[in-house]
Amino acid sequence: MLDTILTQRNVNVNMKITGKALVTLAVTAMAVILPQLVHMALGQPGGVKWLPMYLPVLVGGCLLGTGWGFAAGLLSPLASFFVTSALGLDPMPAAARLPFMMAELAVFAVVSGLFSKKIAKNSLWAFLAVISAQTAGRGIFLASVALFGKGTPFTVPMIWGQIKTGFTGLALQAVLAPVIIIALKKCLIKGENND
Image (cartoon, rainbow, N blue to C red; front, side, top):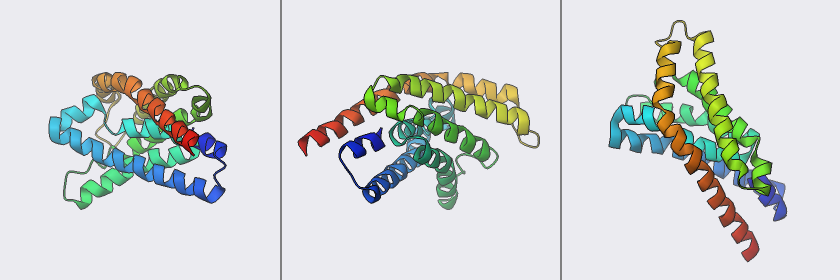
C-alpha cells in the first residue's frame, strides 16, 4: 500500500527506501513496546491472550508489502528478545520460543503483505489480509512445533492450547488492524491531496 501511494506521489527511489525503512523500524519498535505495556498491565497471561506483538506486524505487512514486511516480521521478536535481555528483564519471547515466533511473524507479514497493492485500491481487502495472515502464521507456528519441537519445552497440544487462548486477541486484531490500516491510508491519501 505504501509503495503504491509513494509511486502515485512520484517519490524517488531513495526516498521510497528511506520511507519504508523508517516504517519498518517503527513497526519493529511498536512490536517491542506494545508487549511490554500489555505485560506490565496484565502480566504474562495477558500476552498469551491479547498477542500484542502481532498487531504492529500485521499492520506493517499490509503497509509495507512482502519484502519490507518480512523484515519487520522477522526482526520484531528478535529485537524484543535482545532489548528485554539487555535491560535485564526476562527475555521476551523466551529463547526457546524465539525461532518459532520469528517464523510465525515473518509469515504474518508476508501473507498480509501479499494484499498490499489490493488494499491500496480497496481498503476492505485489509480484513481478508489480516485474517489470512493470522491463519497462516498460527498454522506455521503449530506445524513448526510439530516438526522441530523435539528438544524444546513445546508440544503440539500445549501450543494448540495457547492458540485457543489467543483467539480473543486474534479476533480483536482482525478488526483493529484493518481499521488502523484504513485510517492510515486515508491520512496518506489526504496528505497527497494537500500537496
